[in-house]
Amino acid sequence: MVLRVTVGEIHDFEVMTPATEQTGRSLTDVSFPIEVSNLGNVRDRMAFSVVDQSESPEWDTAFEDENGMKFTEIILDPQTVTLVYLVVSIPEGEELDNTLLTVRVRNKDDTNTQDLDNNGIPDNQREVDFLAILSDRNFAMGMRLVGGETDKTSSQILPPNGEITYGLWVKNTGDGRDDAVFTMNGLEGIATRSLTLNGLPVDGEIEILPGYGIWDIANETYVLEDGAPLLGDSKSIVENMKLNRGLMIGYDAKPYEIYFELTIRVSPGAETGQGGLLEVVVTSVSNAANRTGMVSLMLDVSIIQDLEFIEAGARQELDLVFGGEAIEHEISIVNTGNVQTEIRVFTSENLRGWSVVLNSDDGDCTFEQNELTCMVEEGERLYVNATIRAPYGAELSDTYKFTLSAEPTDTGVLDRQNLQFVVQGEPAEGVLDLAGNTTLQAIGATAIVVLLLLFLIRRD
Image 1 (cartoon, helix red, strand yellow):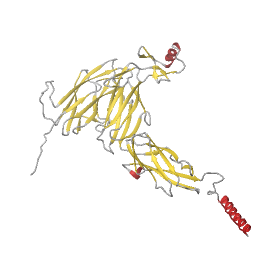
Image 2 (cartoon, rainbow, N blue to C red):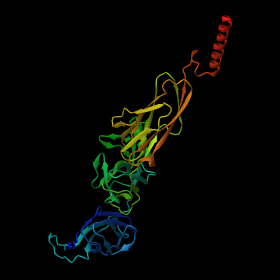
Image 3 (cartoon, helix red, strand yellow):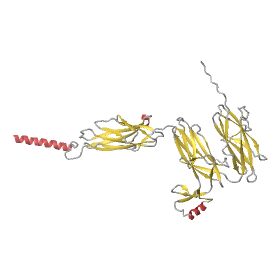
Image 4 (tube, rainbow, N blue to C red):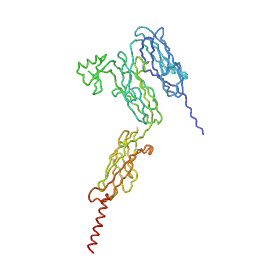
């Protein structure tokens, strides 16, 4: 029997416009980001055009991809997203001259020209409006990264279901009050990206004030007054504000910034070897063309199971006196991998009557056949006690060497770590302790012979 399943073609797409109003200087370009998602199950060809403009003569326009290449049509695979830009050239003119543009995106592979949603636009098309404004003001945002290799880049290895949080300081580098807007591109289907401000999700535009603020060095915050930051247009103005408020020691005048947090969470279904580049861009809501406020985060998905002895790098040398108490020695093992790991801890074979017994006070451990098996969280430390006993009745000096090993149960010898021990066993010191001193043994033997001879002479 042959089973055939036929799936019909589905044409559907969505257009998102995070910044619909842009401001630029005379004889410059402004760029409006347009995010197009192919929600269907087939590859489609999308056509872009400006169908209306309010200014006459019209301002020049073009469509560009992320690499700056001009186009009028793009091919978009099913269930994918692409980011393109409407570029508008601003001519010379008067302050606040503007033009309202209507952009149409049409799916040329979809023949459905009905208007089932009654919005006046065929269902195979989408239309969005943009406003370009002439202004000689400077609109720009800057951003620096906390926790990366540099303040603009970072690379991280995370396991499936792992996560990392970065800090982002955002500054208004323009010359007036302005709002910031964030865009993120990359890691779709591999990880989620969430941006928060004071613990709340960032959704939409955030006002970023320009100028300098009073920085509280000890608390690492800006000084507030009536719930708002104390700001000035220049550093000297803020220095005077500090003086007037008695905030000279422990405070500094520095450019005002707002702190955001970006959390990346790897999907549980992500596989080793997957990864990619996440670009986070902050722009002025009035000037999306200025993308200087950008950081790049590289992510690789991989499970790492690594261990490390804190005492590693030197041979552990111990002394033990025969007939005394056993000695206990504590060692510690750190899970330096990126996942919770089950660790097996054991020693080399006992020899010549010596014995080493392992135990741990950590709750998540089991002991069987003189081996410890413990579950250790990422970055946590496991403490292990080794109790060392000498052979029963030992009287002669003896040097005992053994190895203590730790390894992930999943990878075994591949990630095993070893620690070498040398135990020097000595008899107890004292006048009667002849066993460990050959000179005293010789003297004792001689004395016995002499006494025996004297006894025999007397008998004669």
